[in-house]
Length: 114
Image (cartoon, rainbow, N blue to C red; front, side, top):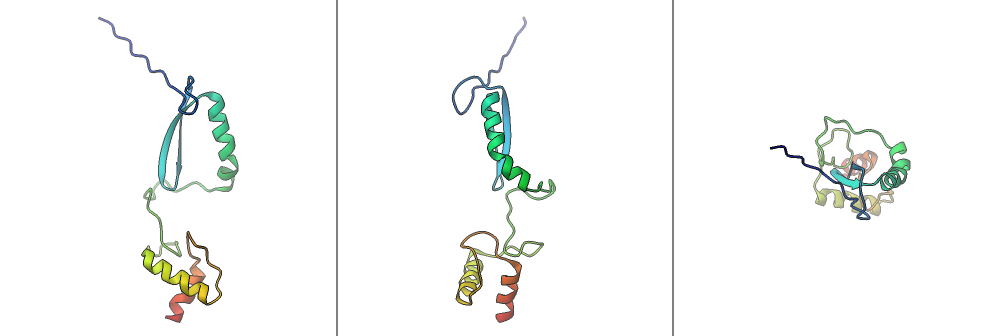
């Protein structure tokens, strides 16, 4: 007895027929989405300016693991330590963002002051 299995992709955006599965990642999480040719083109066009300004991640790095302030091989710091450094930096006139990586120069200034 012969058996034939057919897989039909459904576009995850509009419910129509999909032609491909597109894989992408952001913030350490990988995603897959089934898309028609036109929706896949839209996704690629929307991401194009970000992709062209980015660098490829080293495939040997652990995915989803973030480095702490300073990056570059420094140990990851706790949220409490990060908040403490941000508060100190603001109080001493250093420009520091509310989120994300703290510049190594600010971390160094904080450590020298303590």
